[in-house]
Image (tube, rainbow, N blue to C red):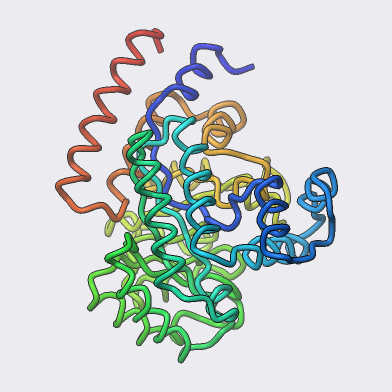
Length: 346
């Protein structure tokens, strides 16, 4: 059993999250509300039915539910509401800064106005910051399966979105059939436009996918990356270059990428000296929170309070915040960790 003082520390400690999807954070009640407001039909028509919908059996089921969530967002008002609600839930966990993925092509396919939806997100972010002090950034996440030409266009959209709080460009989606080499030009656009660079890799595909994302695309962060251990040379290169891994244990188990928590490599990744962070990915769809992921890390994987504090500090360092903001947040986080540890005796 986890020491109650450690559990209390995890609940109360300042946190930073770098890998959470906006659409995958929608609550069942908000999904139902927006569907009704926008005149959309869902596979379920009441709250109990929506909650059952979230109990999928496999990765395909997860994707189907995720796309339903994305399609329910139609207006700037929807994006403002969802962003505010997600940030309010994050602030309740004492998350001080969070970077949220936006599934850009899911909205491009429906011809939504990016200026409208990004303004809605900006409004939600500003309200949350004003009321709760939580800071946030938005990352354009491009589905690889939509091809390289669209990726270039979406990279331009992401650069144009910097004025609304877009901080990074990413690729996700079909990792096996659409390797990083296809997206070199899109990442050149994003880099030239001043965006941070990240990629989902080493989740469905192997270590080579991670290597290509780093070497060909120039990313400083990898979403998941749990298969890097297949290549010890790559592990050493990532460690030396301080490429961060956004590790999401519950997500990997729920999608079947890892068969069980007992087989999850999170502890081995940490022990290899990699710059690693802990994240929730799609908290509503996976039935978790960032707090839950840290509790899991402590209870099931044996992470100590020292190690947990280091993981939070890693997230600050690996974030896409400007350097001066990063330094200030890191100092605040360390000071609060030390004060809370002294109070609780952990």
